[in-house]
Image (cartoon, rainbow, N blue to C red):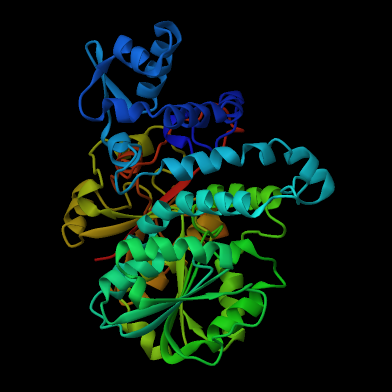
Length: 520
């Protein structure tokens, strides 16, 4: 979640400290940009070096450099052992030039976008982009700019395709790929490597394809690839050919609301009856903060690009008579939508039921939906004391002692191996209703053991919530126990899931609700 690992407070919590963290967020990126430009990670790769040795290699004074190295340690890119500095595994894997997963080009490309971001206020006043490339750019300058862009995006795309390919595991893909707006061709290359019977047709502007051809020839896939220069908004020369796989990777966010339906319809027309259309992009339903900032980047640095919701994109695909999956989130910051002409073909994809369920539940409006192992759920014997001493709902229906005991909860968890941790927000009745909807969705998806524990006392029914104190309930169909009332240590369980909770000191601070949905 952006710089959240370095923040002391959750991004959704208010307060001066969080605002200060936001205001200084660029410090992190500036330190990263400088480190990549200086290639300090190359110096440390074979063996660690002292500050003096690094200063000598970079021809810099020791004083300022020592403080810089200390900062790089603080953001987990270096470690210090005695007088020597070493790369962390993260830096070694991704920040050393000539390594296959080097990300330095994409990082420095991001640095190049800073100038546009400095004009954000002017862009907002103008309602769009205000800085445009110089019209007098010559062919050589244009080719250099395109090469830099392709190099920047190449390794990112290679990482993404490794996340996409598992969905096709077990399929014997044959025939042709159509990769639209291919860029470096890394997505198509991943499929060519995985499926030897596939060939590929790449669509992009001529200047991009010139460089992509060089890259494909170097990797040995050139003989299986053909290139068609095209402006995507103009008629496609391949419209009458049928393709087994059509790829639109990071294309949707580069165009306007008026242009996307045309592009999707052309992609649908190029698809064979048994083929797959893969939409890979950023969506606000997944990594919402990153998607929102990228949307601003599109405002600042493109002509009309923007981020679209997965729901809207799926509606456009339906208008092109395609059947779609839910929005399938990847482990990184992007997500997928698969579309087909024959609905039965979706069943052949390696889309496990839990992945699809998470996508559907996330679409209900939960802030986060995390899959966790039930062994990470912490059950303690002290939690009911917080209910008995400190809560005026003690003794009410579904509150202790009328809720499952810690031992009962432990026994129940033995019958489950996986659960979903759901994060939401007040009001409580709305959150609890959403949790019930999620439980029902899980049951309908085939998880017949699905059972939910939610946050706080049950507040579904006005009469009970108003103060029934005899421990009876007239709505046992919908009522569920609270996590804490059933012995679950919410703070520790959430912490083990990789999230942060803290005690709220003021009534006006942001409240977060959590629920557990046991699956299987």
